Length: 448
Image (cartoon, rainbow, N blue to C red; front, side, top):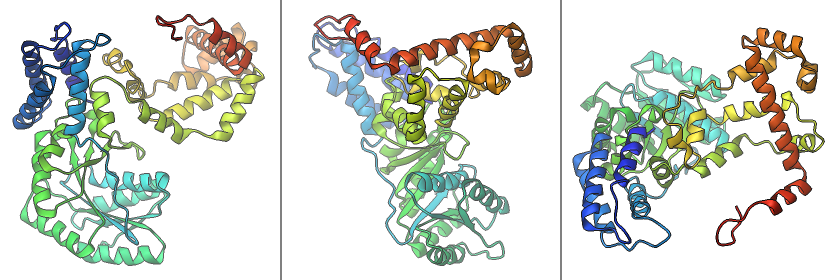
């Protein structure tokens, strides 16, 4: 996401050639490049101009410390302005009420129904809630069926009534059922249209008035750029929603909607959709997103994703196996499984500072581990537990059984051997202490 904008901003910062102080001349040139980058990202002209002017005003006359360059200082100013443009601070979803009622609105095709399922999954998994989904789209039977499929997939109950054509009545009945079944959150999926029209606005307004939801979310396809911002403005004027959800952000390399929507509508972005799977939903943090746009990575989000998949008991068992030099291909396969659960591999690598730009042109398949898994699964239980017995004939059999070459298998076995050695070294406290003592010192007396 934001690849094009990140590249153009990076080029803009290279314009700075000031020595010791940022000058008015190089700031003017850089701010002009930033404005162009934002316009190319489908940010409105007014927003882009205000942003560039604000950056320029804050940068002119800034003294540059000897330890940093003018480009680094300008990057810091731009980062703070980007975070501010997107809302600066993260805003939580409001779950007050018994049950809390969340009303989902948006145009048809924006990903409303899919987001409804993702939100239920998020609340169940991360907030320990017991949600009830409500199919209140009375015009599109497929939407009702889709919600039931999603509900079954994530283990959440869905309320629907195909005979009833009154969405308000359906939602009210669902709330009664939620109270009886001890569901603490009711998420209402509403009807959408291909374009904003009066009938649609009247219907969503009526739902909001009668249900009095604790949270009204507007779902919009981020790939529609400025159209997304204009649609959000129209909805907000009618129903005064509480927050925005940007879907399909993983397919949007420009990011104009994410950058513009807060400043135009003055409502926070609360969630972003980053894929088709039910767990491909991220809470929106403006400062973290600014980090990613400027190629600084997002270590906090990476750690949070890792913690979600972290199993303390498994980790203790693995640590003991490593210490006893018993780490085998079964453990290796288990680690791959945990990494895959964290999400798209390229996105995860992009969260590491400095790596995003380095791999932007590298094609990393989402199934990057499938060939490794195939080779491990082609091994016998004995071979997985003791890879040293894998001789020439066994290698040929494993390679043939996994559809790979012997060279591929040799490479995997070498990587596994290197990994095992490193893990054994790290598992030994004496070795680690020795490594730390022998590490070369950085200038100024600081160790690496």
